[in-house]
Image 1 (cartoon, rainbow, N blue to C red):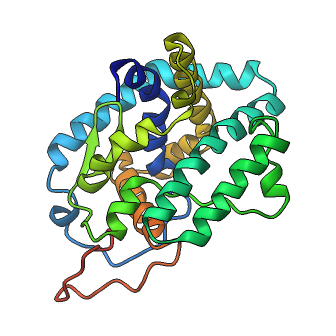
Image 2 (cartoon, helix red, strand yellow):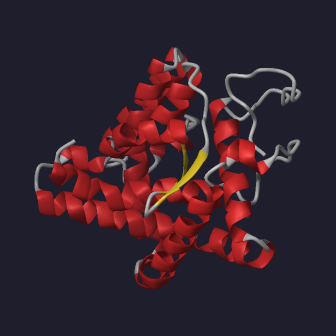
Length: 254
């Protein structure tokens, strides 16, 4: 990935990673807790970075997202969501094939073709209306399918919640964005910033929920992120957690 691509892609896709914890806050299933040291041996470092990221969000990203929602009509924002979602479907298709899920991979490709042709470049989500469901696969999930363990929970500056395994998948996930279709550096940067603000705008409700229910925001986001990633790895139907004496390639989160 070239420096120009990195500068353009980072803002938007890193916020997608950051959103992983928030997206799982309201729906993460309960599982038997494990000692924090097993999933989060870097907690001291992680909490410091988490505090830094929250300060940055409060200072810059959240106000920009609130202004975006206030100024941009809902219909236009939905078109932006669909446009970026069309690119995520391309990368999801690639990962489905890498995970030996050809039927899901073909389905994603059909979504992309349908939305690109009949949805005016993906601005309209015609595929969903036609009954083609969206799958959400990334390279971190692919590595998990290949047998790589999740490793410790990590919070990266700006990038937000991750795991050791997901961190290895980040470079490819970051490269597989809408900016890959454009050569102009200014346009790529603009798309990256738009994606970042758009994603954060979609999470305004989730962050308000987090303010209301979480006594310890760090723990809440961490557990939600780990639960969500575990569920995604198993396509929303995770197996029963193994007992503490059993060995498992992918241990369930806390």
